[in-house]
Image (cartoon, rainbow, N blue to C red; front, side, top):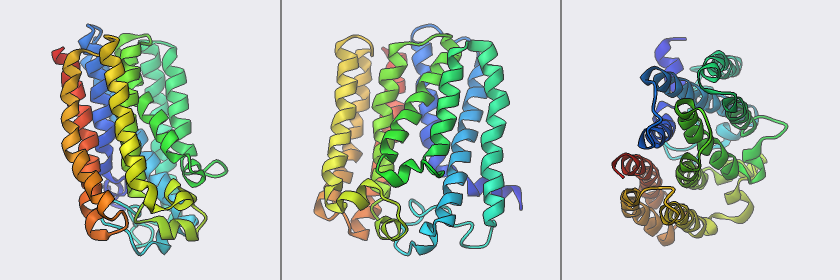
Length: 299
């Protein structure tokens, strides 16, 4: 196995949502004068990315042993259907499992160091975050297969933002929670839309996602609801002065969001429409997180 193969197996493009989440947490701390250490910020970023990478690899492992990825002939590359490293013979199932769990395990010593530097509250954030990352794919919980994968994603990425802030601040605060919750809703929306082209393989292998349970016809409405929910959280934070008024910069994300929704309302199962909707959904999520980060700093 080459280093390039291992890096590619983590689906590095999708790690961008964690990169933005950590930046959002660090900007939350910086906006309130509690950003203390570039070194701690760097360690936080590196190992948050490693944890996400491990969760991605573990997801590929469990989707391989369930037969889900092998059965998926409708995937839209490179967004859905996993990395396919197992199916294409680049990694064995065993190698994938060892690599994924190794990535998750090396986060632990870094977490212990950060706990020592910041405070005991990080124990709860770190342990719960690792648990959700594992439980999302792994049996017996396999949250993604029970129609609650989106909830798990919201919890995980809220913790990314809150944890990144906590490492600097050394205590809990409402600001990173609201900022992280708003952002995590859009991360969940990315997952939700990505399930559409995979729905047939998911259904055939017992992976009961929301799309499998309720059908693709609900996707534009649920996606719209998720967008509106993120805006409600953002508005609440601004009206209560928990988030600065400059956070309104994040509203610019409605441009790619509206383009995604237009495609979904036209035809949520059309490959042609999904090739537009999926990257626009990702773009709206990242744009929201980046501009919210900027708004926190500018305030």
